[in-house]
Length: 182
Ligand code: PRP
Figure 1 (cartoon, rainbow, N blue to C red):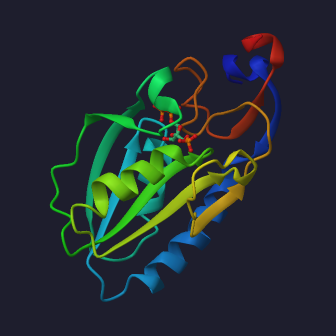
Figure 2 (figure 1 turned 180 degrees about the vertical axis):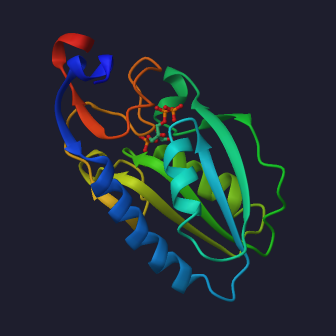
């Protein structure tokens, strides 16, 4: 029994449900990207757990890379500009970029990366695969083509998602108890 469980209000998606959902989405991606030049990019750190599981369900040759970004601080929040802490080293020109994310909320992060990084570097196509999609939070126009689950408006942790950098290593996705973050 994990010591972290005491901070969890309820389990939203079990490890088994997550595994099943990834298997399904991996099959669809495998069909869609046959004969394409696939580059899979994980956005650190939230995507690491999902990334590791998802790429093993994509049964195609592909390149993998990672990027670390953070939002720029208050003045820039409305502009959606993001700071690139760690860039990819892969050349994406002419290739089919698939981003793997843990959650898409406002969409600002990925709208910025799509427009100012991947498309401006000449990617042939750009799509997003996210473990969780939260359309209720959307501010920037971002389409999540491949998703495992829709996220409710609650504080979620686990399977890569953190609160103050903790809980990423929970094997399931849970709702954090209010008393932990209030
Ligand atoms: C989360 C998530 C996305 C971003 C989505 O990362 O992993 O990258 O926020 O939010 P948006 O759609 O509102 O732009 P976070 O900044 O929490 O960093 P982390 O991945 O290191 O936890």
